[in-house]
Amino acid sequence: MLGLRKEFGRIAAVDGIDLEVPAGGVFGYLGPNGAGKTTSLRMLLGLVRPTSGSVELFGQDPAAVGVAALDGVAGFVENPAFYAYLSGRRNLHLLADMDGGRHHDRVEPVLEIVELDGRGDDKVGTYSQGMRQRLGLAAALLREPRLMLLDEPTNGLDPGGMRDMRRLVATLADEGLTVLLSSHLMNEVEQLCSRLAIVARGRIRFSGTLEELRARQHGPDHLLRVTDVVGALAVAGEVPGVRAEPTAGAAEILVTVDGPGDAARLTVALGRAGIGLLAMLPAAPSLEELFFDLTEGVERRGPTPGRCASSSPSAAPTWAGWRRR
Ligand SMILES: Nc1ncnc2c1ncn2[C@@H]1O[C@H](COP(=O)(O)OP(=O)(O)OP(=O)(O)O)[C@@H](O)[C@H]1O
Ligand SMILES: [Mg+2]
Image (cartoon, rainbow, N blue to C red; front, side, top):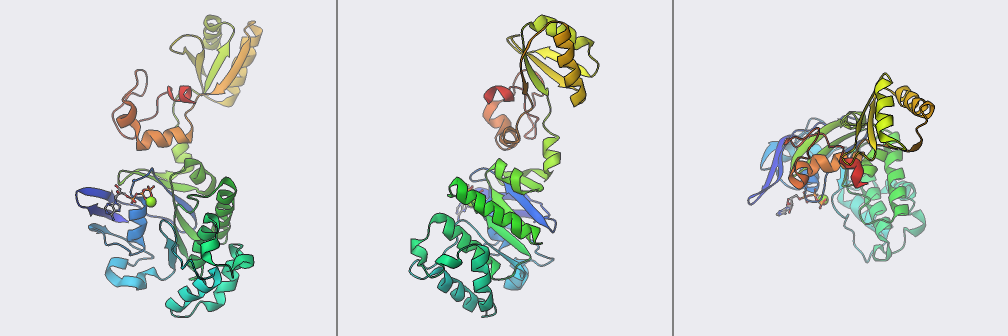
């Protein structure tokens, strides 16, 4: 995607997106409702024309060369559509017909892959939501794609259905398929993807690896509940590699360490000083909080007094984060 933009009237659903998805693995396209995920995928699949900018799939632009650019690309946006009064198997054969009749012999293998072979002769109208999503995946797999574009494939599924769908996506990627998976769930992307882009209001707010996202988890590492806050702060001041500060109400202390060994030395030093450790909790914001900060951030909460107050949308979260959990 290069300078990709799509306007609907006065709304820029996609507002200048530059993104390259490397081959191999599952790439997460993460964003809240209305972020522009479906619109981006529609443009990638050649279903809508960009207002400006362009898309390249293996070097070809669907807006310029038409369906030929979609060779090796498959997927679905929102809910895959089927004839409800026909069986799953029949629907797949119809799709194979429409695709030039080349893929009829793929129908049985793909039904097996998505574990619908036992229900293939039932009408799609009798399928559960999870079965329909899996049939959508089967339909995409018919074309033996190298790149699979999946728009929130776990939407509307129960936890078991989500787990099955995620396993299936992971298996496909293990077998060499590149998957671009849109989602509004940070934990889903964390489970499945090594790389991701976070999109909000039509713009990319972050793009990189999960490790790079985690590196943004600035701030104190631990929250300590101790029997003597003043004494603990004095002890912490003597331990190399440890910096400590009291929380706003001075009832607990926040500790930043250079490495895990420093945290261990601090607990030993507290014990020696006769200070009891009641609890030691992780204080860094969760990835989910980072996601909220990147997509809502300053507009929702406003800068918080203390460290890291900033008006940039990529501002690091404040340590007020741990209080929300
Ligand atoms: N056909 C359309 N006509 C007018 N506005 C549209 C159209 N399609 C999308 N939009 C608007 O574009 C913005 C992005 O919508 P889009 O469906 O791409 O978001 P999304 O990230 O897929 O959201 P969701 O998580 O809810 O599926 C929204 O403000 C939406 O109302
Ligand atoms: Mg959508």
